[in-house]
Image (cartoon, rainbow, N blue to C red; front, top):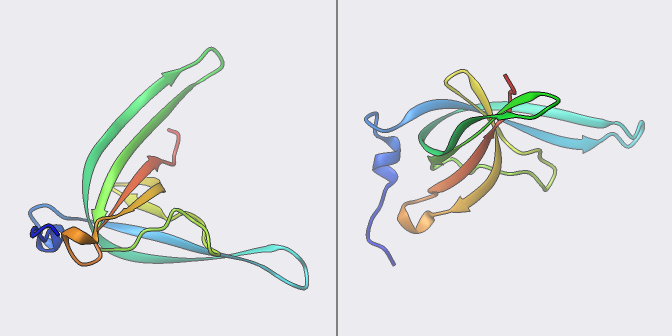
Length: 122
């Protein structure tokens, strides 16, 4: 088992930044069979590192911006399932959706790493 505990680094103002996570519970109303969404927002501390950055894709019909980053936190992100949509993280004015979550609790209590893709295409 590794002896490195990164929990203090994840909370350190030297590395950490603040972000807002929107987690949306999804249920089906039994009377109307309509989907009901109930979002909640949580302020978290997160360390953001680059993944593939932000790239412009040019195609004959249009151009689109794609990007991805990695977020490290003690917050338990979700990529969806079990009655929830994937988390949407607002960081530095941009919205990112969680596409994968990895558990790194061997390196500190609750330490997770989420790969996030740019949600807004502008």
